[in-house]
Image (cartoon, rainbow, N blue to C red; front, side, top):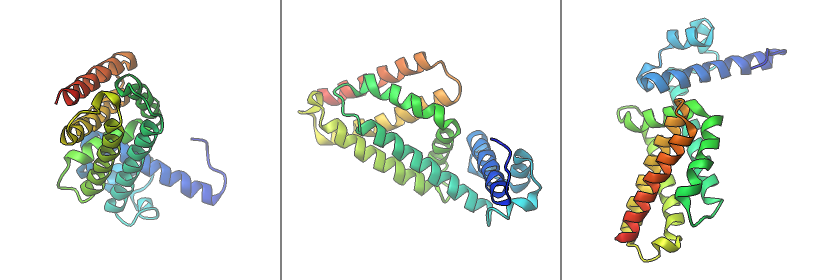
Length: 198
């Protein structure tokens, strides 16, 4: 980030530092790891400055969860916006581009999906359900799955979401992109073959 010039830019800059620190904390420790003192230390601000930007840690958690949900929706838009008969071959590469742009977001999403006690879990579950439904519609249009049972296509879509989130997390964690994409493609092919055989 470049150094801010005006007061408004400084405020925006500080807020971005807090959000970035929040992403790193949630990626490492989950939503329960969000503590004002640690966030302030990570962001390089005094703890009281946190409250100039957020009413509470829960407000920051909601912003992080909403941001992760929006990024998942963007991923799905990208995947379904490029119709293909070979999603196992093309979707991992498309996902790889988004992983590079938003590395911490995928860990926030994954942590939030398993953190069922956190109030923002439902925001992320709703985003995951929407992703599953939209990808299920795309998968249902594939020639290879034209004879597949609708319930099996739904199960396949659910598994595809899990595999893609795992792929994005692996990439965000520094995995070799080629190896991660090959692994993701192999898993997606297995899922689609299973759905087609039903």
